[in-house]
Length: 89
Length: 206
Image (cartoon, rainbow over all chains, first blue to last red; front, side):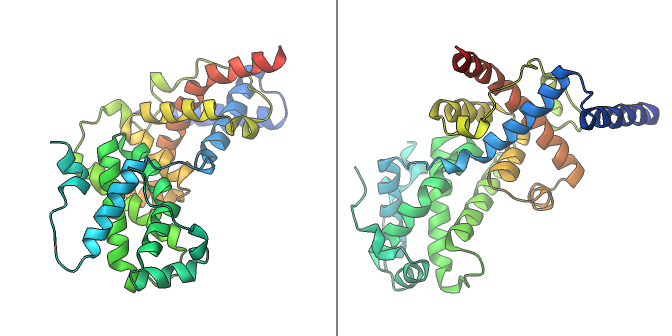
């Protein structure tokens, strides 16, 4: 973290409050308005990311099911084909 | 090799699915995997940025979930419970990595790379645009390109919808530091999407 003198932080705070007032009053310059609006749109878009139903690669699903079958089996067994770490070689 | 094909509707009801899992019905296990594993894997891949590590998180999550099913009380939905296990597994994996973190990436003030370069307005309907597959690809790439300390915060807050307090607790940060990292991450994502959104606006205007 970079340290700033207290006066610098206070001044920055005053500038931000003034800009917030300008935004609410519709007096903020268009480029700064666009900056805020596009930031809001970015947040909206990021929040929709999980709405696009992802797909699981078939081989990943098959290895998971094999691993679960082994883990639920009464006797432990070798599981090298189902283990992603062992698959790295 | 494709996974087994079964009728997923036999376990549409979550209580029935849970009962099937508890009596070790293989079809219930397959239903659980088909219903919840895609999102667990997608989130683990975003968190780790590595296919093998994401698969490791996926497998550990489901093994732990199956082991704990008998004690699952159902206070939250089964999916919510599984996704929480996955998030914890993913974060534990990242902690074990002990990454070399650049000071700029954890700074609590804006850094030169955070400062916006693009200040053009975007298309008016971002939610419609969000359904655009191309935009999702752009966004996934932009998230993957974020430095890890910023990426984790945006994933936990904006995608997994943890509160600021929960995110801060998960990462051992103050709420203030969490908010700063989130803001920096959002600024960088906005910048990464700006060029694509500008090209969409031009195409829509043409």
